[in-house]
Image (tube, rainbow, N blue to C red; front, side, top):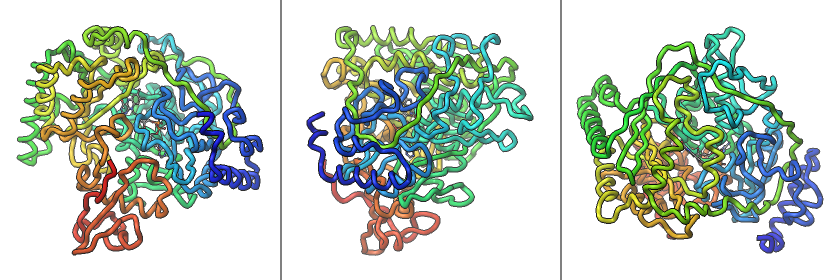
Length: 626
Ligand SMILES: Cc1cc2nc3c(=O)[nH]c(=O)nc-3n(C[C@H](O)[C@H](O)[C@H](O)COP(=O)(O)OP(=O)(O)OC[C@H]3O[C@@H](n4cnc5c(N)ncnc54)[C@H](O)[C@@H]3O)c2cc1C
């Protein structure tokens, strides 16, 4: 790695010099040492030994991307030669975007889709993180490790922490909205909201919450929205669906504001932007007062589970056929607000249902002291990060049943029946659990399946899982199953209708060095079976094997080319392409073929409302290297 760096190309040095010159003009701080001798030893970090790019002293140990561009466990690394930009202000970010040929906006590396996350390196690229804004680095109260989950209803637990007044989260209680900087983590946002009491106290002291949020909350809100991160809600949908407006730095360096009212087409593109349209700097999202939520846990056998899902599927299909919204809602009632854990080696399923109830005991949990932060510098070369080492336990204990039982013990508290504030009822992965789970290296995969065939798909998967090849043997953790409503975001996984999502993890590969064939066979079924036709989660693992030659026009037939039109409008010079090979937007009009990301293609097939489906046909990609 060091050798690679030492042989850094002339191009890289040229870019560094260019950045240096321009930044010096603007009184920005790039050290000479960094440019003259771009080796790890010359990198000046924010603080000695500080490996995280978020607030120093952040409560969870794996608090962000280290100085190497990789995921949170030091896997899926980007090329050594790409740069890390750490702007401290929007102006600085705009300058970095304007002067670079290839750019990627980044959160904290809690994704597994390297090709989407890594800045394109054809011309030395730069990954620009959103977590270093000056306001974001001011000390904030952080959830305490010990008490953040233990007793969410404990009235003795500290309440209403003091966030600095310039912390970039702004609540409008009347409008029921929150505006938040993209680099704020979802955990911080939820903690802030749940303890927020505005002057009119419209939440009656209960604080506020996002209507629906994900199981994991230590990613940035900008990164979460970019990849269509979701919890389980057929009412509110994914985080992307809850955004009311975006502010973003686009390819020409300007700062744009996009709302449903001002730019309906671009808004549908921005909702799930995959970093392809610019760098989101700020979002406005819906909020609602925190309420009490009753969580009810049922334990089912696999057979009972499939029977229940089949019933839902059949009633849903007949309600859709009748065209009755009321009937659809009634059919989906059993999965409306539900999270399910399937333990394949045990043949059992936990079905947790959530129901909002009126209860005054809605208090958020503890926060403890903050730590000082330090001034940020701006552009860096990368620094090798060892990453999470193989787990001895995972390598030696091969029994899938052992691990299924073990993980069941770990998460039992997260699923226990009871009444909790939203913030605690839905968010199951606590800060301390996050620390723990980061210790074992793994890849997380997630796919979504249309509700019309979801039960049939799982039945087929179950037959293989419990059949002669015993595919259950490749699993260690339970498979989290969730439901998300249909959305209008062009690249939303649920564009076209509601879907069942299944989250699954491979803990075998990194600790044993062996390909997890049984696990990958399950993924194959999900991707290739006609009953499943699963779409891959944009931010998760499995793209190289299960998404190679991904054909957007085939997988997102109704909206892929609409996204292509937005790409040409916001990024005509293909600055935000990352390293992924799926940005092909082909169309046909009459006998003529067009590339939508060209002036001619855009003119022939795009309107201010998006792709003209009447005039043009969205076409599959022509070539595929794989
Ligand atoms: C342990 C764990 C559990 C998870 N659980 C869930 C879950 O419950 N539900 C779910 O749906 N997902 C889940 N995820 C996936 C995760 O939410 C996404 O991968 C998310 O994108 C990670 O956010 P990040 O801030 O780390 O972004 P990064 O990993 O840094 O970036 C991810 C992508 O978003 C783009 N991006 C990031 N920030 C911006 C920005 N400001 N503007 C434009 N583009 C940007 C990047 O270019 C990149 O393509 C989980 C991830 C982990 C690690």
